[in-house]
Amino acid sequence: MKKTMTLALALIGLVACKDKEAQANTEDITFLQAGEQDGWESLFDGKSFAGWHAYNGGAELNGWVIQEEAMHFDPNARTEKKSANIVSDQEFTDFELSIDWKIAQAGNSGIMWSVVEDAAYGEPYLTGPEIQVLDDAEHPDSFVGDGKHKAGALYDMIAPAVAAVKPFGEWNTCVIHIDHKENLGWVTLNGTETARFPVQGPEWEAMVAGSKFADWGAFGASATGRIALQDHGDKVWYKNIKIKRLHE
Image 1 (cartoon, rainbow, N blue to C red):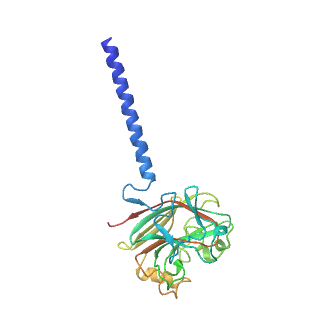
Image 2 (image 1 turned 30 degrees about the vertical axis):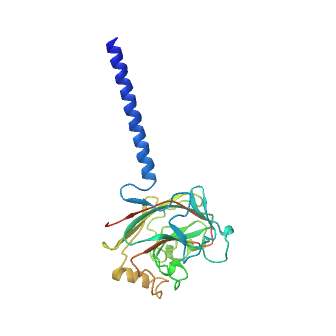
């Protein structure tokens, strides 16, 4: 009898430990998904635009809504006939940004960094370099610019080394790494590196000089700035937005 009771108690203890372990693992996974582990900071809570605002101010987000736990731009929901780019409240210098996006059929958008918010600049692309968000199969931009306008490109400067984008309507994961101390930038799309580049100095200046931004004096000139999500007039969705500050 005593041996049976001892064995039963041991089994109960083992099950309890396993349950606690499973619960801890679940909590760890949830915590990681929230984007706040190993230095990651969540920039989007999945239910509000807390931490974001309309570029150059204004209370109206002009077409941006929350849909299925994602930031969604719907041009049909505009309240004003003007651009509706949104930017992060915080500014960043050296960082790694992870963001999921999907685009509507024949759609176009973009993710920018080092954006200077100033009334002198009517659009964030006047100062912030852009990683292209695009339906490569159907949007006209995909077929011009020697590939430098395709999804995953450093827009108008570096074409994707590999075509890694998924079809319209499907989620893509983009990671953007910007490090001024190491003078290194790189981009991955769905786990595949699409571009690698310097972020300052002669090589960067040469890339800018060979692009449409050559005469834009403020373009890419600031190491520090906001993250921007672009209104290009098409439906787009962004979620799971998190950032890791480097060298801090």
